[in-house]
Image (tube, rainbow, N blue to C red; front, top):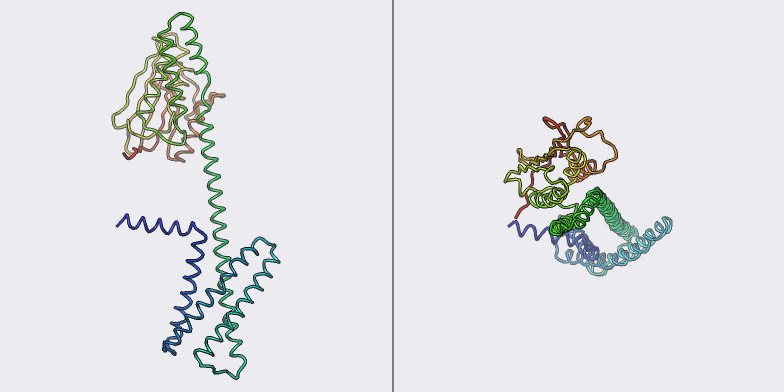
Length: 365
């Protein structure tokens, strides 16, 4: 039943997307409706089958005669307002007069068997009715066309807004700190000079895998946290070659968080920021703790270090010049609107803790 309903809705969507088909459906339905309403209104005083035949003839004549108006109006819509108004009045008046003649012939020659009324206003009343009907047809035509134009403009504006939104997300996503790449290449160069080729080769391989992941994943789409953690491990393995025993990483990832959907490369800038401003400043062993847990309908992500700390104001770093953390906050706002939290606080006993709260969402398999 649901499948049939979905098919029905899809067919109606296709109907309204095709202007040519939509015109013929509405045009035919309108004149059929005119015939039904006219017959119901006349049923109380006229029940002979011949009268129904006259109504069908009149409706069919109206259906035929108003078709040219479509093409006349289509041309007129590209003209100036004065020319448009004059064209609509002249064309609708001509069609109304012609339809009135056809209706008079049908009524007096077929229904009345050639009888002619003596009162001239009998013909005039028919003409007024025809002009009202053609005027309604013209009004509906322009009303539907204007509605289509407004919908098209709204769709174009929405499309432009979506494209700008996506471009903004990609810009934020690819504003990565180049220091990581420079430091890694320098470390590889040092390893080669020291003839430590095996370690250099492994480092190049990890760097290649990490860069491939960062470039292949669309910043607009989300990835499973488990996939994000794998990329983060590649990054940290590269950094461990640089820092050696000075870098210790502790992972606390709850099992039910592995399939949670997160923005791609959401943790790497946070970790990179911690290494640059915390671990690199320590002479003794630096420690990074990465947590992921579920709390109700939310996913909580934490990255904490034991560095010298930083100045924090209203839950944000007061440090200027950095783009990593501000970009993360902008990306989260673009993806989740207000349904997220991004805070920076002092870690205990020392260091900085960055916390992210986003909706817990698991991709359907």
